[in-house]
Length: 294
Image 1 (cartoon, rainbow, N blue to C red):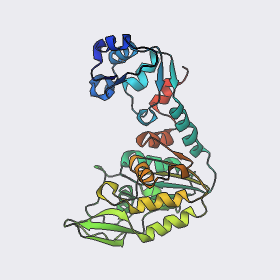
Image 2 (cartoon, rainbow, N blue to C red; image 1 turned 180 degrees about the vertical axis):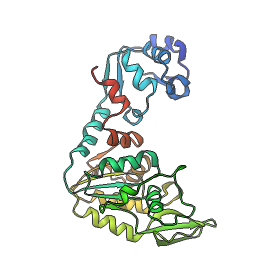
Image 3 (cartoon, rainbow, N blue to C red; image 1 turned 90 degrees about the vertical axis):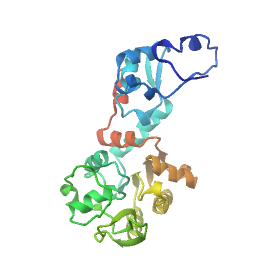
Image 4 (cartoon, rainbow, N blue to C red; image 1 turned 135 degrees about the vertical axis):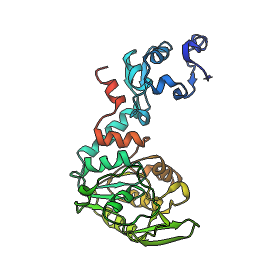
C-alpha cells in the first residue's frame, strides 16, 4: 500500500489494518520540512507507526535528517544488511592493500577536495579528473576558460606539491558554439570549457592501474550528463579488468557500470555518492553515529 500523506498520524488507519506480510510504503520523507529540519516532533510522528527501526538507506545517511538521526533514538534501531555491507567494504580503504590507486572525478568540490587530503598519505597514486581537476589546474596557473569551478576559490597548493597526485594531461573542450577539440590541459581558450579527458590522460590512468592492488573510484571523468561518457566507460572497463580489490560509487559512476552490465566484475559497488565520499573522509556518518550503542 502506498501512502502519500502521513504527518500528524494521517496513516494510522492504514497501519492498523495491516495483516501479516503486508507492506506499506510512505512517500519520500523529504516532502515534509520536519524531515530536513531534523524536527523531533516529526520523528515522533514516524515512531508512532513502528515497533522497530532499520536503516537501509546508507546513501542518505550523511544527512542529519529526522529519519536518520532522531528516529533511531525513539525505537529499537538496527543497521540493515546493505547498510552493514557498505560500512564493511568501504572501511577497507582505511587499511588498503598496496599499490593503492584513488581516482576522483565529478564536481563535488567542497567534499572531494578534503577527501583527497584525507587519503593523500595513504594512496600511492591519486588521479584527479572531471570538473574537480579544474580547481587544481587553475591553482597551477592554467587557464580553464569557462570550465566549471566552485563559487569561492579553494587553495589546493598543498596537493600540487605531491608527485603522486596526477592531473589530466589533455582535455576535450567545447566552445560556445559546441565545437569540440582535444587540447593540452593548460591550453584551454577563454571561450571554452572542459568536458572530458583525452587519450593521453586515459593512457595515464591505464598505466597507473597496471600494478594496482587496491582501487577506489568515485565520480565520472567527463560530463556524463552531456554525453561525454566514453572515457568513464573506458575507466570502468579498465578497473574491472584488473585483479585489484575495487570499490566504486557515485551516481554517474554506477550508472556507467550498470549500462555496461559489469557490476559483478567489481569487488563492491556502493549505492552511495555523497555518503560514500563523506564516509571515506570522516570514517563515520550521522546515520552511523545514531545507531551506535543501540
